[in-house]
Length: 144
Image (cartoon, rainbow, N blue to C red; front, side):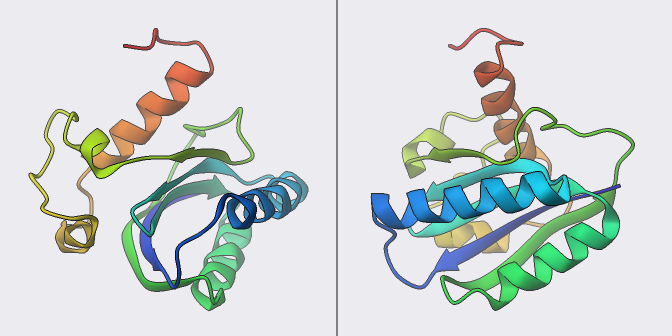
């Protein structure tokens, strides 16, 4: 099984209707292909963790890279996993502000979300933040 985290820049600001449409299609397709994960929309950037069968993840990554809604696709990590970190979500979603990132332990003091592209691959602070969102929402740890 594979798990990857990427960041991409949106080619335009996404409206609530745009995001709703993206989510509805993604939930259906991810359910069909047994993909799980979390999508953040932050300051005209997507930050997403996806996990599932290696071939399914490879195909989804190709589809995301080809999607005209994104550009500047940056892979943060792509790794083999034994178990899913977001098992209960075909795709969780949260719109988030840059200031929310500043409250993360180990935050890199970024000036803008574009600075996320400069992070080194394998740095897990962003993944840990996303995992905390998941755990809070499925009731495994209390919200702050």
